[in-house]
Length: 310
Ligand code: UT7
Image (cartoon, rainbow, N blue to C red; front, side, top):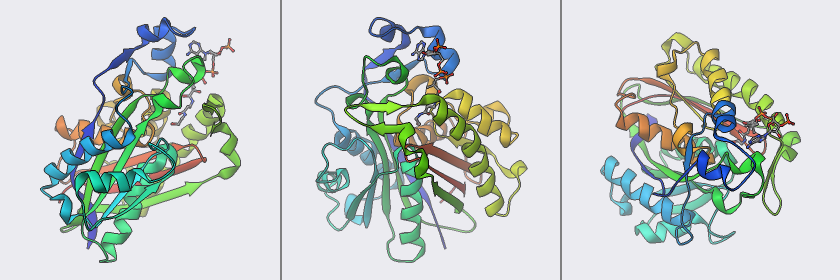
């Protein structure tokens, strides 16, 4: 018996901040941002909306799509580096807000690979027969930790939340293989001081290599070849990094998810937000082999190959 995704949901704040808006705040320009990152606009949450609120909205959507009542949830895993506060965890807040009375709750800290870590953790509980329904949320309010005067980072990030209800699935559907990893030696390259600090060029080099490698590894671990892959959903950090992963799998451009243009880099939310986007567009269908791959501060990475369907 394998674990798979029963239903997904998303939430993004209404407020759109375009590259042109940012030109007025920092020394940057639309052309530089578009060509170097692929980002055109991002969503920024208002002061009264924090990470837990966005998580709640995305989770209600996911539960509805999965046809599951909150009281049926056995566990809630929230991947975030921008919790409302250090503790209580966002997952415990969410458990209370949803009324998920019997659910265990924990947060996972693995930055932009957080959703991958959450997904793989949830899978273990389901496939061991311990739990039946696990809610995994990737959620960030990065706008509260970004230095809005630093053009190296201010143009990159956005806010949002994506959620998935995991459960046992039939036949050969579900999560086929995974890879998780960490290289703490690169910890200095993205770190939290007073604000988010990043050595973009070093992260870029790591990401270009690791994304393609991990994507290919999970394909092989699943006993597949790259020609079997129907769709790639990479972490939406930078279109140039995503392109490197796509080329490594020899996939045509229309079979890679791209939401970085409209949401920017939403860290742990980027992969679930992209999945929901592609499900809504009908690009991902039952029976498709889908590869998810992410990387981020740690440095960490994670990838999953799955066959879509319940
Ligand atoms: O989710 C994981 C989190 N992090 C990432 O994924 C980031 C990975 N890295 C990247 O995506 C890229 O390295 C960046 C988009 C951050 C930067 O792109 P780059 O092609 O590596 O540019 P660079 O850092 O080498 O900078 C090139 C030039 C510099 O000017 P000089 O020194 O050549 O005169 C920068 O000062 O671009 C300048 N620059 C900007 N110019 C206009 C840096 N940021 C900006 C900006 N607007 N916002």
